[in-house]
Length: 373
Image (tube, rainbow, N blue to C red):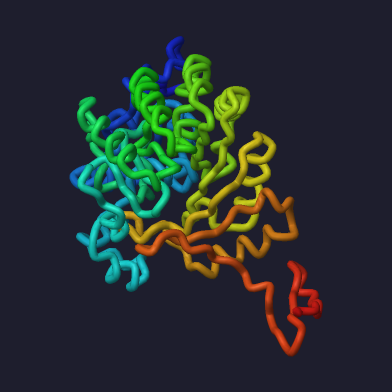
C-alpha cells in the first residue's frame, strides 16, 4: 500500500499492483488523507449509491490536508452527489429539477448488443468493461460503474464485433468503458486483431484515463503490441495541470514513440479548472508533453454530478481568453453533449454584416470590415 508518510514500495510501477491495492474504503483513505467532516459524511453515505475507488498513484497527487485540492475533488466523494436525496440548497434549482434520470444521454444510440452504442452514422462506441482505476466523481456514467465487469466473456465481445462487421457504414470504432485499459493486453489485442480483419473499419480509437490516473498501465509491452494495429488513436482526460506529472509524461512519450497520436478531452469542472489561469496552464503543460488539447466538454447534466457544472458563459469566457492569447493548436473546441450529439460552443467573432461585407472582431475586440462576395 501507499504508506502514510508518502513512501512507495517496490511494486509501485506495476499497474496490476496499483489496481490490486486501490483505496476503496473510508478506513483506507483515512490512512493517507486528513478528511474533513464533510468528506467523512460523504464516504459513509455516497457509497450506497456510487462506487468509490482511487489508485494509489492518483491518491499520491492529492494534498493531504486540503479538501479543495483539485485531485481530491475529482476522486473523493462529496455529499452533493446525493443532492436529490438531501435537498442540498447549494445547487442551482434548474440543476435539481432538470435531471430526470441518472444520465439523460445514456439511452441515445442504444442497440440490441449491450456493449455497442451507435449514436453517429459512421462510428460506434464499444464498451469493453465498466471498471476504472479511479472512479471520477464527475463521470457521466457513474451510475453504471461497479466492481464487477460488464464484459466478462468472449461471447459478448464477439457479438459486438459481429455488429460492426455487419454494418459497412461503420468506419470508426471507439473502445471505451469504464476504462478499457483495466483489462489485460491479451484481451485488448484480441479485440484489435478482430477489428483489423474488418475491411471497412478504418480507425480504432481508445478512450482511457489511464495516462492520468494509472500511467503505469502504459507499458513498453502494451505499446509494442498496439503498434501492430495502426492507425490507433488515444484520447485521454487531463483536467488540471497538477495531473501532468513525470509519470504521466513518460506514459505519453511511450505512446507517441509507438506511433499513437494522443488527444485530450477535458471536462469543465467547477472549482477545479473553471478559470482562465488554470486552463491556460493545463493546455500549455499538455502541448509541452505533445498532447493535443482536443475538446473541452461542458459537464454533462448527470444526477450525482450537478455540482460540477458551471455556466456556459464561464466556458465561453475561458475560450475567449485562450484564443489569441496562446497558440491556436492549444485551444480546445468547447462542446456540450445533447441527445442530438456534440454541439460546438464558440464566442461570436462575426458581429455584423451589410451589403457585400461582414464585420469581424478579433480577440482584442478590434473590428474589421471584410468584403463578402
